[in-house]
Length: 90
Image (cartoon, rainbow, N blue to C red):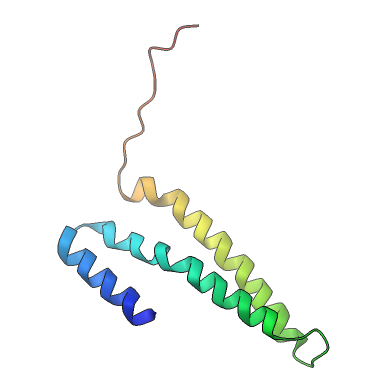
């Protein structure tokens, strides 16, 4: 999956030759979240690896928070214009 992601980034960079390739990892992040969640479910509550389970949960929360933060920055990164409706009647 990582190889496919890197190939997608390279092809996107060659095709568009802009910062659009930065968006490619956002397509693969849900799969990464799912992998972490599956690993978290795999560990039972009774094992001595509770610290690993807690670490995986922390990593899931941090990755999702980071993903949300990155997605909110996309309009600025790609310089999308925000049109304000100045003709609003009151």
